[in-house]
Amino acid sequence: MHTLPATDIELAAWLRLSLAPGLKPAALRLMLSAFGLPEAIFRQSPEALAEIAGEAAARAVLAPTGPEFDSRLDTVIAWRELPGNQVVTLDDPAYPPALLTMLDPPPLLYIKGRLDLLHTRAVALVGSRSATPQGVEDAERFARELSAAGVTIVSGLALGIDGAAHRGGLEGFGGTVAVIGTGADLVYPAAHHALARQIAVQGAIVSEWPLGTPARAANFPQRNRLIAGLVSGVVIVEAAMRSGSLITARLANEMGRDIFALPGSIHAPLSRGCHRIIKQGAKLVETPDEVLEELGFARRSAVRAAPESKQTVAWDGLDLRNARSVETLPMVQPNLATTHSCGTVATDSGATLTRSAAAVGSTTVQIATETRLESPEVVATRATAEATAAFAETEAPLPAPPAKPVNSEAQRLLAALGHSPTTLEILATRTEMEDAALQTTLLQLELAGQISVLPGGRFMRATHSRPRLDQG
Image 1 (tube, helix red, strand yellow):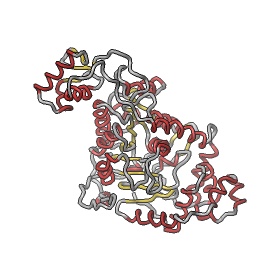
Image 2 (spheres, one colour):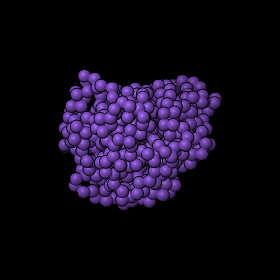
Image 3 (cartoon, one colour):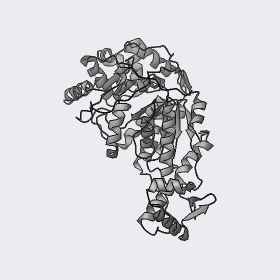
Image 4 (cartoon, one colour):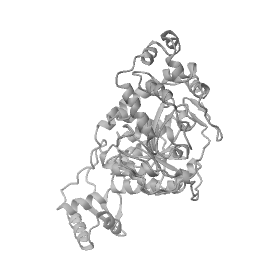
């Protein structure tokens, strides 16, 4: 999969359009449909633009660029020249076809790594940033097995479940895509610098935000909608009642994607969000095979990639030419006929988009004319308000036990135990404690009333009170 790179003049027009202050997605689609490419839009009179998209949109488009625009354009052009970096515009044949089914596909995408992964079968794995050890294990296992079946794993590069999903996806043939809420030249959170470098080499990092954009709470609703737009289904691994991952699930549902959730203990705060969406109609899944079966994805055997699919990517000035190359699957163009509440947009398997006004116009007109429910501005505003509140509110830790553990080893063991019955062998692996110390600490916790010993040599937290619904 290769892009059809825009010329510097074309890129300048797309960049100016993407940076136009206050330009709504619906207005952008109308103007692209009426006038074609951005260069043609900027040649129109204010009256012509206002007649198509309204006076506010006309003013936004024709507002003069600031003195920093030329330097920003130079930065984008220089960034695009680095190995593995690509800027894909809405009229590029390489633009992810799944995003064209959205109400508001971004006019520009900044991509580091393998573009082919944005044209394959994909599933999102998302969940809590304050994940339990069991949740991390489940996310990695699901991602690893789905990736081994040739499915690309999409997530948001956050701490907790997202990071585990990316690590699991990197172990399989399907690879992983990280959709981020900052500029593509930044990494957030900082703890994931090494993981981001690995994804840039073996997978792909995608952002719609201009280079240099820092992490802001308001950015993440748009990040979540891109995650939902790129995939056929979303799997929620762990989520609190007010988790942002539930908003991702809702956005995906509005786009006609399938929603899955892993159940957990009724005493675990991070299971309550999963149980809530299961009650609302999400599919309860216990194994990756259930996800594959529900989506109609058959398992695939490994396929040796063509030499051109191996990429090296520069990140923050570091040369990664010696980084480990990986074998990838050839690009798979799925049938993206997708029906959802706002209409139907079909992209056949063999179809390719051309750099023309017709390609953009036909897609946008169909979406705009078939919409019968809320306008994209209302949907986007509602999602932004909800997800901003969810992101700004740091997920709370698990509820405290009835009495403090005796020592630091006991605290570590209790954290590793989680809320599910766990064997001695698993605890030994999670804590890396010696057998004698592990047995002694378990006895201390049992005598303190903080754990229970179950039949079969399994251990579980002792529950003394109902957890708060908003924790996790």
